[in-house]
Length: 184
Image: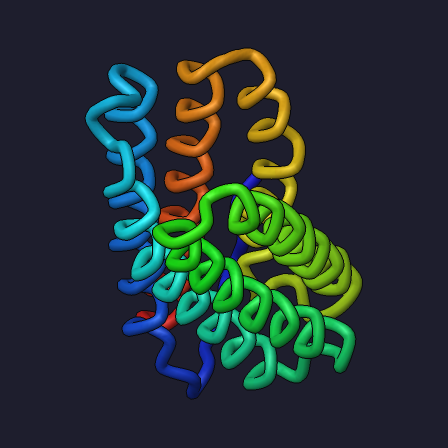
């Protein structure tokens, strides 16, 4: 099932491009990590910082699009919360360069906050002007990490980094959906 997007005055192409770029970077890092975790090492944390900040930009693009089509306050508030949580998620990855154990706890909690916020926003999109919003992409970006990344980490490097790679793909799809919305 695909989302049908309508015309909007909100130009969210730059937001979409940011999410696509970050999604591709995370997908590639995830694939490299799945094949050889030693290759990513500490560079993982340094690279995920800008990628997560670009994800936050993508979330702000979804929020801008949602506001432009009259989405509910619940949707825009949940997206704002997701953007803040994703920014803090990025900072927690930067902190991992100093104290990895504490940072893992921080970005694990923040990942759940991002996911819950995106899921709440997506549910609100299904109940509101759904034809104008990338509800499926937002839902996938919210559900995927909590449904797969912890289980993947428990099973080993290959499933853990593989789940992260697919999460990057969900962000690339979300970004492409925003770019598509801006072209209509």
